[in-house]
Structure formats: structure tokens, C-alpha cells
Amino acid sequence: FKTKVSDLGMEFLVKGNFSQLEKLYLFSTKITDKSLEYMINCNFHKLKILLLQKSRITDLSIKYLVQCPFKELEELGLSHNKITNSVVKDLVDCNFSSLKELY
Image (cartoon, rainbow, N blue to C red; front, side, top):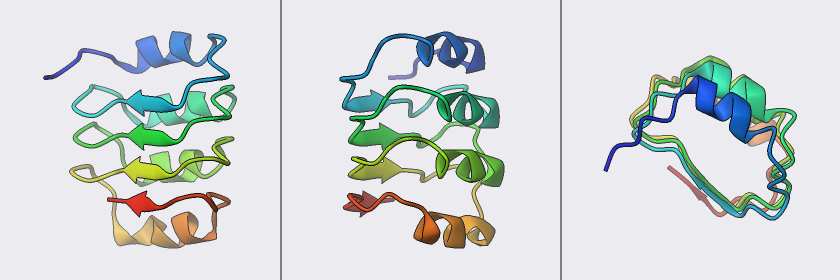
């Protein structure tokens, strides 16, 4: 299954009232670093699962991701992207203290 959600769709999604959102599946989409930048100011405070595999994100997305208000994040899928070892420290130092799965 492949959705056609892109940065434009994410720009609108993050403006919605989704304060109870717990799962966001964005794998195999056309999102880029811009979508993660939009998420910095989202109200997804109860997000527990964020799957971003096989999208078009890079190291810059991780710089944005660690600024997001995801205090309850438990599962983060980042595989099959253009993310390098250079941002691993950012993930280690971020405030995702509930994180249980990272791939």
C-alpha cells in the first residue's frame, strides 16, 4: 500500500485538532524534510507511534523531529530513508523518554 500524502498534505494535517492522535503511519509516502519541519508546531501530544519508513526524509528531518512535542512516543520507524550516522546523537539526546522501539 502506498499513499500519495506529500508535504502539502502534511502542512494541512498538522493544523488540525488531533490532540488525541496516537498513531501516524507515513511510510511509503512522498513526504520530505519539510513535513517534519511542519510537525514541530503540531498538537500531536499523545502520539505513540510514528512510522516514516520509505519516505524521502534525510538527516535534516531528525533535526526537526527531536524538536517535536512527542513526549509519549513509543515507536519510531525511520528505516529505508536517507538518514546517516551523523544524527544518531540527536536522537540519543532528545526527550523521547517513552521510546521503546526504534528502527
